Amino acid sequence: MTPRPTPPSGFGLVVHQPLRRRHCAGCRRGPLPLLVVEDGAPRCLDCADLGHLVFLPRGDTALTRRAREESGLSAVVVRFNRRRGRYERQGVLVEEEALARAERRCLADAEARRLRRARDARRRAAGDARFAEAFAAEIRRLFPGCPAERARAVAAHASVRGSRRVGRSAAGRALSEGAVTSAVAASVRHLDTPYDRLLMSGVPRNEARRRIAAAVEAVLAGWSQARSASAG
Ligand SMILES: [Zn+2]
Image (cartoon, rainbow, N blue to C red; front, side, top):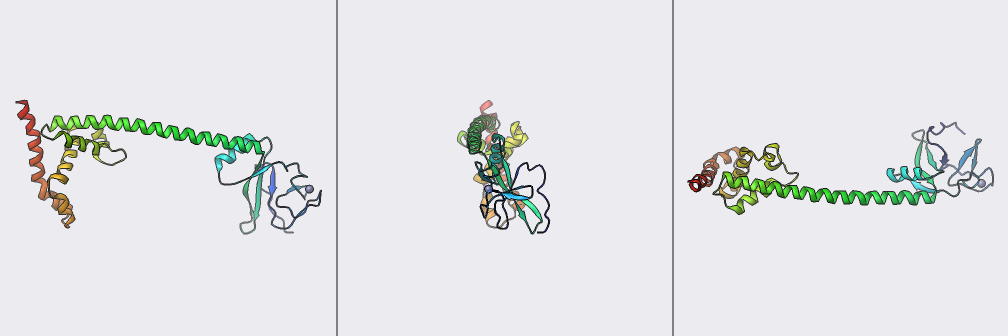
């Protein structure tokens, strides 16, 4: 038998998944699916006093960590990888009760995370609504001629979370005149001018913008003049 590296220290108690047929040096049972090497001889889990442990395959790191924490006695299961020339973890052996407790802790965590996500979503939605309301009010202040329905639509659009639209930018957050005007202009561009049609027919964006610039200006001017008119 060619000498093999020993499993890395820090594994604690090590149980092997043998590559070859092995029998227990104590009770002669075999071939063994899992064994412990004691004084160079293989022993079955029962003879090694590990027979009561259950196998938890690798894959769920949190569950594995917790099962080992909960387990007074635990062992790492390794298999030798000939090609790589090293032992590889296959999972752990833990007490059945410990595994059950670990599973409950993981479930409780998942539930806590779910509740926290729902709470965050509600808070964000409330924040979005407040922001959209303020945005719409600012639109109506700068452009009194803009229909209220339109102002609400622009504001809602601008405040959609996660979008890169102006409403979520720092300027939009501050409800600066520039940010509000540019959100309204964007809406006008798409709804009150042939901008989208020009783009669809292959007109380059800059050229399309140039062609509709006057129309956008006219609408914005009309909406904002209603301010002076109503003020006067
Ligand atoms: Zn045995």
